[in-house]
Length: 351
Image (cartoon, rainbow, N blue to C red; front, side, top):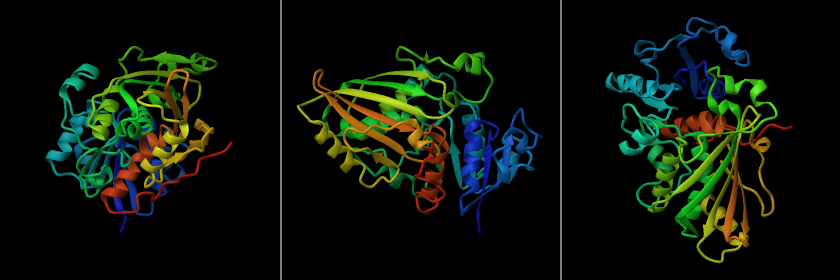
């Protein structure tokens, strides 16, 4: 018997992508899609690409609508997700609750207050099975049989998986980390905004959240601490570019010794040997966002610039798949004891 799934906020990009992936999953059945402003409209009128659900209607987002499903996924803005999620927890509404917002990711109330503000909610199990941990159970084992999962931020996924093995192995200096990310416009959500109009984006690259204020910074620092036990500092700059999907993260750090590119490549190979969703390019080869579009992989390429004693790791992900909805499917699979890759593709789309 299939496990029932409800998605709150299903009219947005993240919720719609999760609906697309659930439709192809042999063990899950999407029975309820809810939305706020689109409540009462047909799914096909908002997501014409979701043919399987074209004649379904978005329902009102409420505890009553969502309760009773085996899986409830909250694809709502931060703040809203935390409040509704707490009501669902208090009422025992589901076997597995997923929060795709930021509300359940951070462990520090201080970091939450600095970067988000508003009510702080207790963190859920973090939905990144590939995240190495310096102590305690592995990230993958923590997700097994869990009842609540915080889906990572898309930018946090790219930067964390690019740098975590290097910080953990002490081959880079932890207090001089840098990341510049080219980000597709879907990462900003579906709510209409002037700066997201095609006429504003076309032919332009637009930096945002510059100067240490990007909200994924504390999440990445938290992840790197779990990976290494070290305190790190990170300069992160995101640049909105005229593509609908994808993140290309150029991450760099000062080497702690005289490591060669071959040494770094071998270290990364060993670190991710058991992680099928992490694809390490051969030396001298670097990923593009086109390589991973539609796939649940993160592709990595490494190089060393000896003139400044820095290592570069280039990371590419599809922000809506590995960066959001695909990570949710991975967590769902692990929580219910299925093969981690069930319902997911490691192959991208081309051209």
